[in-house]
Image (cartoon, rainbow, N blue to C red; front, side, top):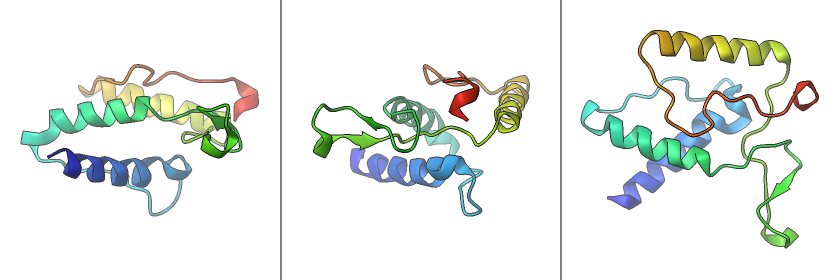
Length: 114
């Protein structure tokens, strides 16, 4: 049901993307039953598309500061990490993966954003 998916996605987003997944306890590998894999991937991609991208102190989504949210996806720490992520994406695609979220694989910002 949708309540289960909300909980699953909340835990998945927090576990994989907090601190850009660079903490030792970050989720690196997710096991999803094949019977739910397409639905999981679709819902996850849509959820990621709703997250704000920017520097950690940037506020988004509101003119009212009390309702604004800080960036939820923040820059990688340096350009070598950007290159590494690009390599991982290319490797996954070569092995049959596909990017399904709208801006997946895009590099946002420039050298000053890392």
